[in-house]
Image (cartoon, rainbow, N blue to C red; front, side):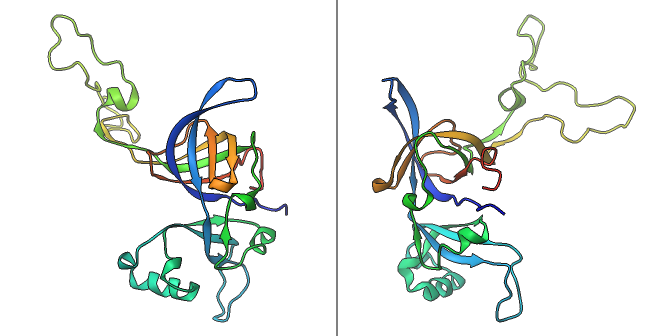
Length: 229
């Protein structure tokens, strides 16, 4: 099996613009990536209790967490890591191959220098989209609405009929109707890296990045161009 490439957890800082080699200004999203702390390792090997995780993964932490916010289980985890300064606000598991897993030990820090990304590479960005609250079908699904002409009353932005006459006599599942919009887990694929700045732990992405400023994102090599990533 090929080496499964590792990703990083980061924070969306906002947008700016940079100039490419031809002098064209392009809009980019600034992502603060790492350093990530290896909180734990998942392996297929049997541990001393006779149990196995059944898969290989690295449990990464990002962002400091104050001691006063730690729960009792979290205090036990950070104590094993070496102290409360090891506490992390965001913890995510990223599946990796055995070869990648063997490169890092629990308590080690992973930065941009360890993933070897460069300008022009494609990555997948996973995050949570902005929440829009409860919305109607016009904003949620781009319905055209009804005619705003003479004789139309209180029916300008309605969804229309949701019935299906005699059979099956119910509303079909998946019918597009008003409801909660946004605040979903989304992965944007094939986002191009415009620039990598390892000394600042920052990467600039040219493309759509889910979430608002300050939101958590997970970036991995593009799966369509790296099938084992």
